[in-house]
Figure (cartoon, protein in one colour):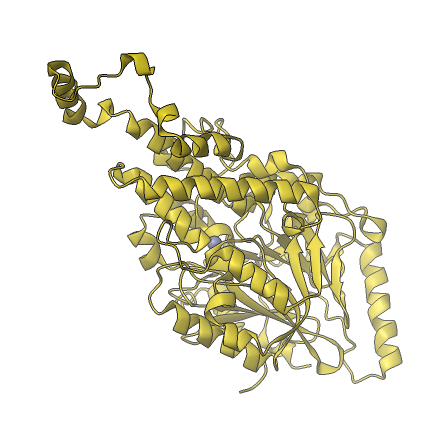
Length: 511
Ligand SMILES: [Zn+2]
């Protein structure tokens, strides 16, 4: 099978269609027709039909079209739908060489703050696990919430014996030993032989207060809300802090009873007890267990959100002041809010997050299109580029069985407006062909098979000289282009805005 290729200076983005989960393969066209490959995540939600076969097919494809070599592997965060492939398709991945494994700073075992966050997560998970084993008679919503969290962590909680996200991540780290733990800001990352492409790390936030912020503000306006989700937000447990307290009661049941022992009735046949029991059983709201199970349910949600907020977020710039591809993992509110605090060093000092968002032409929609993983004013509304397209790694059928609204309707509608319909979904594939010029030229950049969808991103300014050139002169040309671009920082953006949308013609590939 042929290698996956991108035009020189450009990028091809392959989104796999394994189900609800992320797996992206990016090819970058380097000098002299060489290709560089970056993979971002590889997983599918627990409980997906044929998960192993699907992930093996994906892994096999990745191995084949990259020649068994990745220049970088990015794992955004520790959720099953982003890492399961490293368990389910191990035999394929064993044969894959990876130069560098990029992980968020929150995964760094040498970082004390990261260790603390991980320890809290471990305690919270343990608390939930023990809650679930005792939750036989718990109200539905409780086990439901815990169940969905367990799906993200790859566990059948209480049933044991299944590989977890931790196992998947540990395996990847063992397999590919050149780890790089990424902090936001500083100098952008790069790949050898790919001088013009820069990977700006926007998150996870260095400040853990942002990691804890997983919900939209109660004042609203931060996300794309509908009626059902607005209001009354922010009244939740700070799960990680509450974790030990939630965990303790299960170890000592007496501490969990609401009344002092002096008030306990010892004789079950006593008339009072019978009476109380009847009243207690009659209505749900009288049952005190609903209270603590609800708290555990909230804890489950928090745990989930905080893990999402540790997502490694990359803004990938094709050349200086050129197009940007935004990969956010499953970052939620706090992660997005922190991006404006990020500062860059040296040559990149002037760069702002607003600038990167303005030049974003491809947005990998966060958390499969859920309501709290794409910020509005501080996020999508700042992606003003006329060429904007979106990729949503979602499977609506699966989401529906979990009662998740993915993609969240108001967000999806806004995406349609912002992208003029240039939205690719993992389940349905490419947008329908229409007579619309924006869609028509977009479709020319795209391909799809049952296994994946793929689209090309061409730079505004091709970095290489159009005519065949010697190595030396090509280098000289590239550096001149960079200098010019630095001087006129806003030039390419302005030009792009004028031709809204700027159609990228296939002809530009033949060079
Ligand atoms: Zn996910």
